[in-house]
Image (cartoon, rainbow, N blue to C red; front, side):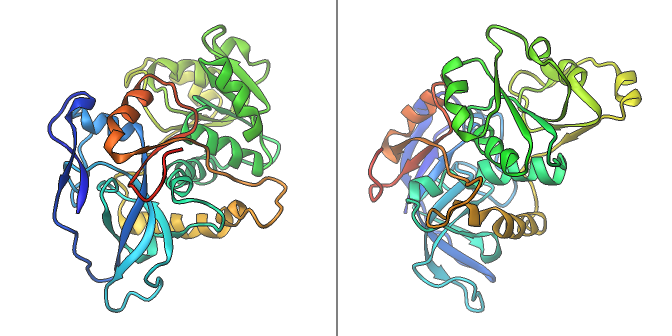
Length: 332
């Protein structure tokens, strides 16, 4: 099969297409013919040699999410049939023509969505759902601050937070991205290229989703209401910080770190089941919902042009998700 391969650590020039063995199906598993695969900043970090794949996943084939059709099942695996449209998260290897996953990790692709649109769902929406519901415990009427709201996770989190009944505040260094985010549930936007978010907020927030990390930590804690929750999803701005622990104690604040890629199968399956039950029906375009969910697909690149997709993501030009597609899915 064909696969995207990192020939070494470095810039987009190390991205190649090559032939690798087709993965074998084991007990409880299905093999999916991948039609489209999402691109994430984790793929960029892995390309630079900064974020290796977890044990058991391909070391040089990137890709954390896929959308495609079931091509083979192991005997005894009965949940899916050949030809079923599925999507899901993996620890790596999704940017190949085939990927093998446990049958209980896969999600059905909602009717009306293309493979490219479906590939924009798993990482962003599962991460956002886990952060807001399991970690952040968002309640109706609470104020939620989402940093980098124009990102894949940010646009997904805004939609889910709005569905949960929260007031959604988003930050971005781009006024244009903030304007686009309004249609996805953002009630107020803060252009941090003009005003620090700590100064712009007129009242505290109960939950923060943060991908910035260390340099933003002190300001994040300063704007949290008593018993507020800070959910740390990334460290784009740095991994170290100095904070006032007295503030954490006095206000009984929570700082929760979370990551998807290294979770075990036993951790992933319950999350997938819960998301499928609570959130997946909201993607059905045939049914009218008060707060529907929709993938935010900026652009789909052919796998032969994935280096250009990496470059666009690194320049922060994108809004929502970027995906790579094999020839069967036309470039958007």
